[in-house]
Image (cartoon, rainbow, N blue to C red):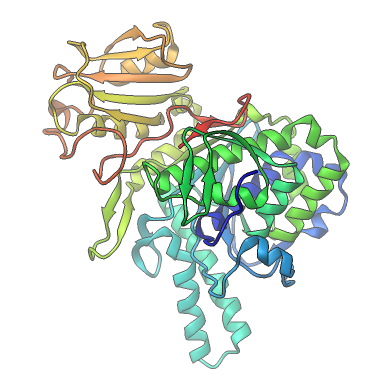
Amino acid sequence: MLSGWRGGRAAARGLIAVLSVIVLVCTGYAWSSINNLESDITRLSGLTLGGADDGATDILLVGTDSRTDAKGNPLSAQELRWLRSGDDISTNTDTILLIRVPNDGSSATAISIPRDSYVDVPGIGMSKINAAYGTTREGVRRKAVEAGQSEAQAEREGTQAGRKALIDTVANLTGVHVDHYAEVGLLGFVLLTNAVGGVDVCLKNPVNEPFSGAHFPAGRHTLNGTQALSFVRQRHDLPRGDLDRITRQQAYMASLTRKILSAGTLTDPTKLNQLQAAVSRSVVIDDDWDVLTFAEQLKDLSGGRVKFATIPIVDDHGWSDDGQQSVVVVDPARVRAYTSSLLDPSRNTGRPEYTVDVNNAGTVDGLAKNVSGILTAKGYQAGKLLSDPGNERDSVVLAKTTDDPGARLLAKDLGGLSVAADPTLGDHELRAVLTNTYTGPGSVSDIGGGSSGDDSSGSAGGGTATAAPSSAITAGSDGPMCVN
């Protein structure tokens, strides 16, 4: 039996949004037989969403830490014990997720935006993105009270302004026009997890971390709702801190999606009713969202076409302009190129299906970091940054087989490198080995000099570009992906 979880709510707060939307996106078609779905979901008005003809439905998911459910009803004493809700309720959004679904319903990509991403927030300026909602909300609420409005009216105006500020901030960062908005509470996480009978996860190493209450042995486990809060909450004692926590969340979401899409869930009326009840009590969506029509659009979606990604990161150990806060540095131009590549086949040509490790096998400082950033902007999934001199004299692209189309495309993108076989690499895993002979994009000859900083993987204070998991996380695998 896994230990219970203790204290702390920040990480799980936003994860609820993610898990709830998995139900919206992946089981919506199963709801077509549930007649009261539309009347059960709470609606938000006045957000002015949609209107862009960009070939996709884009859904922004945020989380709230509330002691009431989506209908405004107080949680029971037992439910509060599940959530360990404290007295101070923050409206900062600690996990923000953008779901891109092409209009043909053929796939779904959940893009995580780290909570500490340092971005331009309308009306505030440069700030961590997780403050866009809460800071705007409180500022508008306070001014309304000072102007003589009632507390209730001031609260409504502040909340509306906070939602709008977050929507605009995400749109400015990603270049994506948000079509729909969903906001969910912590309770939904426990209810969704328990409704499917628990969700499988896998840990590479045992953990014993008191801040999150995560005390798990290595290996595979089936977690119930309260146990899973510990698993996805932990960020201390992880190699990449909050970014490893995002990876845990994505691996968990993939496992939950796989469980939901299984015949054992979709053909079980009791589980479907429990899923519907979980969404009804925890999800709030915009009032222009026709969920059943959207569900019909997704009727052919399979687990293998639901994947999880994170926006490209420049530096996960940056500092705010005033030098007072540790932040995650992002490049909006690179983020926009990445989100666009997930949708436009003429641009990505299969690139997002491949994870690319970049190995600086030479002596040029920052080479792997530079090249990895360029490849991410082209649409590839960022892999590990390495600094292994190896035995290669000339730069080369390694793949499982030399005829891999992704390897040939990568070789072309890097200026015409050769391709060699490395059977230890998995499908859709590539490695660019760059020596001092490299003259392609991101090289000294291309940019006039390398950036400072080493290229080793990890993020224990080096300030280097961060790496994604070595394999893309999807809901189509046979079992849970083992993570830190």
